[in-house]
Length: 279
Image 1 (cartoon, helix red, strand yellow):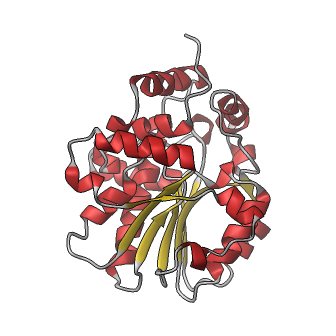
Image 2 (cartoon, one colour; image 1 turned 90 degrees about the vertical axis):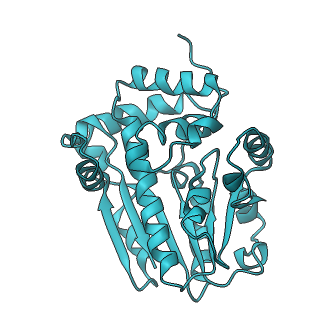
């Protein structure tokens, strides 16, 4: 089957994060994906010979959810902002954990993505999810180019939790540098994200062979997706707390909790991403 390269990664991610709902706690995002997007997601898994890909996305989704909720429960933060939300309902699910709160919740993405996102949300019957988060148009690359300030883009937010789920490797190095600088301008802020350490290319044949192939299946361009030790240290500098968790450790924890087999043992079978929370 020929793969439609015009279908965005947002379609596939919305589907994959719902393949293991007992892990991701997200049985709904799949309804944001079109049938063509679901077909493409399944086709990519076969073409990459990467059957663990849906579980990897589900584990990542759960990590983002758990750590966002944990941070917001401290009472130290007044907002939760997702960059490049795509068709994920992560922010809506996080907000559902706080039925009565003054915390503000934002989904952000490019203009055309936000228009399509709103259209798909209107087709869902889950009214609580539809109204859960504010839909915010934000082009990160354009904002970086114009040297905009996050504090001006979100003028009523003082202590945010930022979520960068599956986005850091689609941003140019210039944009990443701008974003990190802007986040650090807040006196109090937290960030939850995933990235690939430099070691992932040497430890995983799946990673070495899969990234180039994956780039051929989606319209988004993969940028400088590897963080070396210096880049990681530069990012962590200035935060009081930093947690690093390899995706295989998170997979073991979540699979065990819901009585699923632990499958992330050989790094040649999956992309060995690193999950991180700094605050």
